[in-house]
Image 1 (spheres, rainbow, N blue to C red):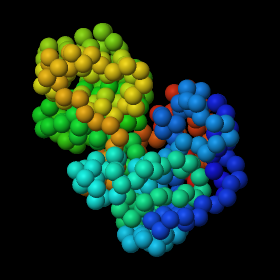
Image 2: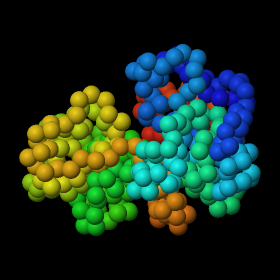
Image 3: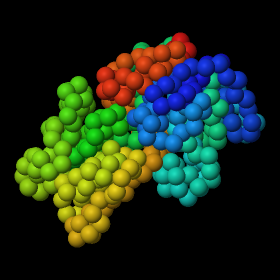
Length: 348
């Protein structure tokens, strides 16, 4: 079978590898219909991570058809259409029961990788996999793309909104215009925010954010961007801030635009220093967030919202690729020629 391999910085290519097999009784083998490229996958591609050359690639999002199941799997069977969350919760530990299955306490190997492939081995699949009604052929290409976002970016955007405690009527600021930030706009609207301000410098992403429910766009960064947000909030600051970048500047901006007593939901993978702790303390700002609760959100809120047509997060995929031109998908995302790259693997 074909799988995307990280050859070296700047080069990812599809190579022939052995098809995965059941190794443990809670494994599921999935025939991938569609995968994609995440912004975090680009770190190694850009040479920012110390990733070994000629190793499995970091792709971690997929949807597909169950091919085979281990003996402990009771919730899905061969032929089922499933979303493969990038996290693998157990559903019964204290973290999962509290709605934080991304931080499952039962599984050490809790994060997917090497999902840009024709077949994948999904570990701990009994609770974590999300079954979609019917078959891929029952849905439009747009709906298929929306299902694909439910493997990561849409639940991650929702996690930002949930941990930022977005409430009906709130003013929410979304920092970051990648796929997660754009899904954060969807989530803030879904939770009832009245004013949604996105920080974005790119016209294509600004347009999509407005389509998703943003009411205002701030193109500036740093002090200029913070000043613009304070003007839009009449000097009060935001009730909720969704931090979807992870840089030192984005974290400090989140603190600077949050009103006293506000909540910040941080889902950007941290790189660099954090925000000023003393400022957080004196303003009574709450910071929470982390790795997303994919299965919890998909089963509880997001899958039904997609099926009902209430949200259409699949629009974050602006270009389609296949495994044979996977490197172009990475390069186009690096060059910001596409917001998020979808990778067709098998006919839907």
